[in-house]
Amino acid sequence: MNKLEYPALGETLYETVLPNGLRIVVARKPGFRKATAMFGANYGGADRRFQLAGEWIDTPAGVAHYLEHKMFDMPDGRNVLAELSAIGANPNAFTGAGMTAYHVTCTGELTEALRILLTYVSTPYYTPESVQKEQGIIGQEIRMYENYPNAVVYFQLMAALYAAHPIREPVAGTVESIAEITPETLYHCHKVFYNPSNMTLAVVGDVDPEQVAALAEEILPAERGETPERDYGPAEGLTPASPSAERSMAVSAPLFCLGAKVEAPAEGRERLRRRILGELALECLCGEASAFYSDLYTRGLLGRDFETEMDDTAGTMTLLMAGESKDPAAVAEALQERVGAVARKGLDRNAFVRCCRARYGAELAGLDSFNSYARTLILGSFGGWNALDVFPILEELTAEDAAAFLCETLSPERVALSVVRPAG
Image 1 (cartoon, helix red, strand yellow):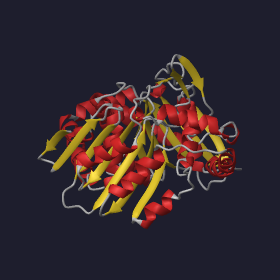
Image 2 (spheres, rainbow, N blue to C red):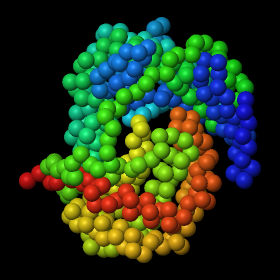
Image 3 (tube, rainbow, N blue to C red):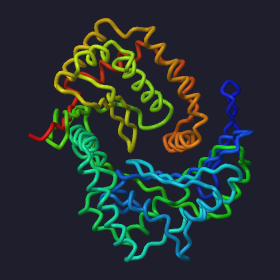
Image 4 (cartoon, rainbow, N blue to C red):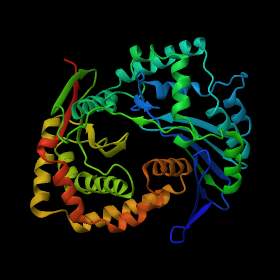
């Protein structure tokens, strides 16, 4: 295995690609009793149309999420969750727009938990009865999110920003779309996207990297599958499909989500750099320590729930700002005034340096959050960047870089505003 050492961080990574195409990344943590294994598929809710063997295939919205729910069923009736619990392992899974992952954390020996994890994720088993039963369960989940204001205001913004990209729709799909899912749909998508060459196994803990690789070779299919070509629809420009969207719901005060599409490289270290730059620029512009936030908080236009994010998934990168406000339009106007001031005067260099140092410390602390670390290792594997590149990138960025990013991305014609107002 390829060994990468980072003495300044006290980290050592081991990487390899098996003959079947599976990428393995191990972060060795000598002396730690806790260990986490995460098995990720480069497949999410936005991957609904793909080409395989020269044929374009369309699938209903929600298949990736549906697969996640059904992967714990085994042909022999085994209860893998009970087996993992019996050995003191804590399993879970999640599906995003661009990735699905299954993970297990335990204290002590990881081998048996890893064996169970690799076995059930690589063993599809779906019956008409179990698929039909799951439709009711997922349908309830979908209805819950349709009535959850924070989810509504977010997807309303994504639909305003993106004209066709499937990221504008919920990962779980709709009640109507999941009714189209059959066992054959699930078997097909599992074969396409859960083949080892479309997956990464990340392990963090005091483990033997060679043993991890040997176990993966023993359990997983030996053949390398074809990598599907994805189609996210026609190319999207940087201006929103619509500048605003609004809805009334049972909320006590208006919620808003303000955002813009971000131009970024398709993959690699430069894409990671772009995301980190955006996150730091937002923190410096309107984080809790900024004059912008302090002013709007004093005026009652922002509250403690205000947050910013750079959403980077399924080929898209989106700048987001969200929270509760008595006047969302005034927040959007104040933001443009602040960006105008940045264009004239730049960002405060000392404030930017403080943001970089705070982020550096947070990233260091994150290396001891094994679940988060494993997830970042997988995202880096799929995106063509190294998870630990974040540290040298933080040392490269400047206040001038951040100011240029803000003026480019938050120009008035690039921004869309989504609002959920109190009904009545």
